[in-house]
Amino acid sequence: MKKTNIGIIEPSMILTEGIKKIIDGSPDFKLVKSFHGNLNYSNFVLTGIDILLIDPRSITETQLSKFIHDCKNGNDDLIILTLQTSYLPSQIIKLTDGVIEMDDEPSTLFSKLRNVSKSKNTNNESCELSSREKNVLILVAKGKTNKEIANQLNISIHTVIAHRKNITTKTNIKSISGLTIYALLNNLISQDEVILTDSK
Image 1 (spheres, one colour):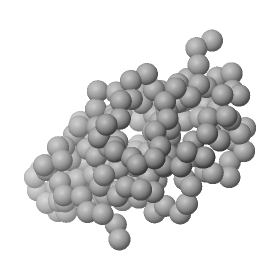
Image 2: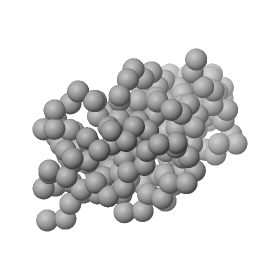
Image 3: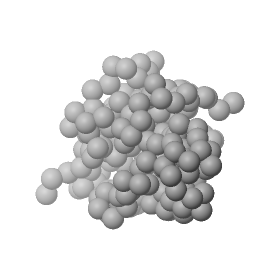
Protein backbone atom coordinates (compact mmCIF):
# COMPACT_ATOMS: atom_id res chain seq x y z
CA MET A 1 0.00 0.00 0.00
CA LYS A 2 1.29 3.46 -0.95
CA LYS A 3 2.18 5.63 2.02
CA THR A 4 1.07 9.24 2.38
CA ASN A 5 4.09 11.55 2.18
CA ILE A 6 4.44 14.08 5.00
CA GLY A 7 6.51 17.27 5.09
CA ILE A 8 7.23 19.35 8.20
CA ILE A 9 8.14 23.01 8.54
CA GLU A 10 9.22 23.48 12.15
CA PRO A 11 11.92 25.83 13.51
CA SER A 12 12.91 23.38 16.26
CA MET A 13 15.06 20.42 15.23
CA ILE A 14 14.16 18.61 18.47
CA LEU A 15 10.42 18.80 17.71
CA THR A 16 11.03 17.83 14.09
CA GLU A 17 12.99 14.72 15.12
CA GLY A 18 10.31 13.73 17.64
CA ILE A 19 7.53 13.97 15.06
CA LYS A 20 9.70 12.12 12.54
CA LYS A 21 10.15 9.21 14.96
CA ILE A 22 6.39 8.97 15.52
CA ILE A 23 5.53 9.15 11.81
CA ASP A 24 8.22 6.62 10.87
CA GLY A 25 6.44 4.13 13.15
CA SER A 26 3.27 4.27 11.04
CA PRO A 27 2.46 1.90 8.16
CA ASP A 28 0.38 4.62 6.43
CA PHE A 29 2.61 7.69 6.54
CA LYS A 30 6.19 8.56 5.65
CA LEU A 31 8.14 11.71 6.51
CA VAL A 32 9.88 12.68 3.26
CA LYS A 33 10.97 16.29 3.90
CA SER A 34 11.62 18.45 6.94
CA PHE A 35 12.67 22.07 7.18
CA HIS A 36 13.94 23.65 10.39
CA GLY A 37 16.36 26.25 11.65
CA ASN A 38 16.49 29.72 10.10
CA LEU A 39 13.45 29.49 7.83
CA ASN A 40 13.27 31.09 4.40
CA TYR A 41 9.77 30.34 3.16
CA SER A 42 10.51 31.33 -0.43
CA ASN A 43 12.97 28.43 -0.91
CA PHE A 44 10.69 25.47 -0.19
CA VAL A 45 10.22 22.76 -2.77
CA LEU A 46 7.15 20.71 -1.88
CA THR A 47 7.16 18.23 -4.76
CA GLY A 48 6.05 14.78 -3.62
CA ILE A 49 4.43 15.96 -0.38
CA ASP A 50 0.78 15.03 0.26
CA ILE A 51 0.39 16.63 3.70
CA LEU A 52 2.46 19.55 5.02
CA LEU A 53 2.66 20.28 8.76
CA ILE A 54 3.67 23.88 9.39
CA ASP A 55 4.44 25.66 12.66
CA PRO A 56 3.54 29.28 11.80
CA ARG A 57 4.78 30.94 15.00
CA SER A 58 7.77 32.53 13.25
CA ILE A 59 5.84 34.27 10.44
CA THR A 60 3.02 36.79 10.17
CA GLU A 61 -0.53 36.06 9.00
CA THR A 62 0.16 37.79 5.67
CA GLN A 63 3.36 35.79 5.08
CA LEU A 64 1.54 32.56 5.93
CA SER A 65 -1.34 33.44 3.62
CA LYS A 66 1.05 34.13 0.75
CA PHE A 67 3.04 30.97 1.43
CA ILE A 68 -0.11 28.80 1.45
CA HIS A 69 -1.37 30.49 -1.72
CA ASP A 70 1.96 29.81 -3.45
CA CYS A 71 2.03 26.19 -2.23
CA LYS A 72 -1.50 25.43 -3.41
CA ASN A 73 -1.15 27.25 -6.72
CA GLY A 74 -1.24 24.35 -9.16
CA ASN A 75 -1.31 21.81 -6.31
CA ASP A 76 -4.90 21.84 -5.01
CA ASP A 77 -4.54 18.35 -3.52
CA LEU A 78 -1.87 19.48 -1.03
CA ILE A 79 -3.19 19.40 2.54
CA ILE A 80 -1.62 21.94 4.92
CA LEU A 81 -2.05 21.51 8.67
CA THR A 82 -1.13 23.91 11.46
CA LEU A 83 1.39 22.41 13.86
CA GLN A 84 0.37 24.22 17.04
CA THR A 85 3.26 24.42 19.49
CA SER A 86 2.01 27.53 21.32
CA TYR A 87 -1.02 29.80 21.36
CA LEU A 88 -2.05 30.95 17.89
CA PRO A 89 -4.89 33.33 16.95
CA SER A 90 -7.87 31.57 15.34
CA GLN A 91 -7.41 33.49 12.07
CA ILE A 92 -3.97 31.90 11.67
CA ILE A 93 -5.31 28.40 12.32
CA LYS A 94 -8.18 28.91 9.86
CA LEU A 95 -5.73 29.48 7.02
CA THR A 96 -4.89 25.77 6.99
CA ASP A 97 -6.89 22.56 6.57
CA GLY A 98 -6.66 21.48 10.22
CA VAL A 99 -4.62 21.47 13.42
CA ILE A 100 -2.14 19.06 14.97
CA GLU A 101 -1.50 19.94 18.61
CA MET A 102 1.75 19.20 20.41
CA ASP A 103 -0.01 17.24 23.18
CA ASP A 104 -1.80 14.91 20.71
CA GLU A 105 -1.13 11.22 21.26
CA PRO A 106 0.36 9.38 18.25
CA SER A 107 -2.99 7.64 17.66
CA THR A 108 -4.71 11.07 17.62
CA LEU A 109 -2.11 12.41 15.20
CA PHE A 110 -2.66 9.52 12.78
CA SER A 111 -6.44 9.79 13.15
CA LYS A 112 -6.31 13.51 12.29
CA LEU A 113 -4.06 12.86 9.29
CA ARG A 114 -6.47 10.20 7.97
CA ASN A 115 -9.58 12.30 8.65
CA VAL A 116 -8.27 15.44 6.99
CA SER A 117 -7.44 13.43 3.87
CA LYS A 118 -10.97 12.01 3.72
CA SER A 119 -12.55 15.37 4.59
CA LYS A 120 -10.57 17.11 1.85
CA ASN A 121 -11.84 14.66 -0.76
CA THR A 122 -15.45 14.98 0.48
CA ASN A 123 -15.32 18.78 0.56
CA ASN A 124 -13.97 18.91 -2.98
CA GLU A 125 -16.93 16.84 -4.16
CA SER A 126 -19.89 18.21 -2.20
CA CYS A 127 -19.12 21.78 -1.12
CA GLU A 128 -18.46 23.48 -4.44
CA LEU A 129 -19.62 27.10 -4.49
CA SER A 130 -22.12 28.06 -7.18
CA SER A 131 -21.12 30.71 -9.73
CA ARG A 132 -23.37 33.26 -7.99
CA GLU A 133 -21.83 32.42 -4.59
CA LYS A 134 -18.37 32.88 -6.10
CA ASN A 135 -19.43 36.31 -7.42
CA VAL A 136 -20.66 37.29 -3.96
CA LEU A 137 -17.49 35.94 -2.32
CA ILE A 138 -15.29 37.94 -4.70
CA LEU A 139 -17.09 41.15 -3.78
CA VAL A 140 -16.96 40.33 -0.04
CA ALA A 141 -13.21 39.76 -0.39
CA LYS A 142 -12.91 43.14 -2.12
CA GLY A 143 -14.50 44.80 0.93
CA LYS A 144 -17.95 45.51 -0.51
CA THR A 145 -20.95 45.86 1.81
CA ASN A 146 -24.14 43.81 1.38
CA LYS A 147 -25.86 46.83 -0.17
CA GLU A 148 -22.99 47.40 -2.63
CA ILE A 149 -22.99 43.71 -3.57
CA ALA A 150 -26.77 43.77 -4.09
CA ASN A 151 -26.53 46.83 -6.34
CA GLN A 152 -23.60 45.47 -8.36
CA LEU A 153 -25.19 42.04 -8.92
CA ASN A 154 -28.72 43.44 -9.27
CA ILE A 155 -30.15 41.25 -6.50
CA SER A 156 -31.82 41.99 -3.17
CA ILE A 157 -29.91 42.42 0.08
CA HIS A 158 -31.81 39.39 1.45
CA THR A 159 -30.46 37.30 -1.44
CA VAL A 160 -26.93 38.53 -0.72
CA ILE A 161 -27.31 37.53 2.94
CA ALA A 162 -28.62 34.10 1.90
CA HIS A 163 -25.64 33.62 -0.43
CA ARG A 164 -23.25 34.66 2.33
CA LYS A 165 -24.80 32.12 4.72
CA ASN A 166 -24.38 29.41 2.08
CA ILE A 167 -20.75 30.45 1.53
CA THR A 168 -20.07 30.29 5.28
CA THR A 169 -21.72 26.86 5.54
CA LYS A 170 -19.83 25.42 2.57
CA THR A 171 -16.43 26.86 3.46
CA ASN A 172 -16.85 26.71 7.26
CA ILE A 173 -15.32 30.22 7.38
CA LYS A 174 -17.10 33.04 9.21
CA SER A 175 -14.72 36.01 9.12
CA ILE A 176 -14.24 38.36 6.19
CA SER A 177 -10.45 37.98 6.44
CA GLY A 178 -10.85 34.19 6.30
CA LEU A 179 -13.14 34.43 3.26
CA THR A 180 -10.67 36.77 1.61
CA ILE A 181 -7.87 34.24 2.11
CA TYR A 182 -10.16 31.48 0.79
CA ALA A 183 -10.79 33.58 -2.34
CA LEU A 184 -7.04 34.09 -2.76
CA LEU A 185 -6.23 30.40 -2.31
CA ASN A 186 -8.88 29.44 -4.88
CA ASN A 187 -7.68 32.04 -7.41
CA LEU A 188 -10.98 33.94 -7.35
CA ILE A 189 -9.12 37.20 -6.76
CA SER A 190 -5.52 38.29 -7.08
CA GLN A 191 -3.40 39.72 -4.26
CA ASP A 192 -3.47 43.06 -6.07
CA GLU A 193 -7.22 43.26 -5.50
CA VAL A 194 -7.09 43.03 -1.72
CA ILE A 195 -4.97 44.41 1.12
CA LEU A 196 -4.32 41.98 3.97
CA THR A 197 -3.28 43.36 7.34
CA ASP A 198 -1.45 41.49 10.06
CA SER A 199 -3.28 40.97 13.34
CA LYS A 200 -1.71 42.64 16.33
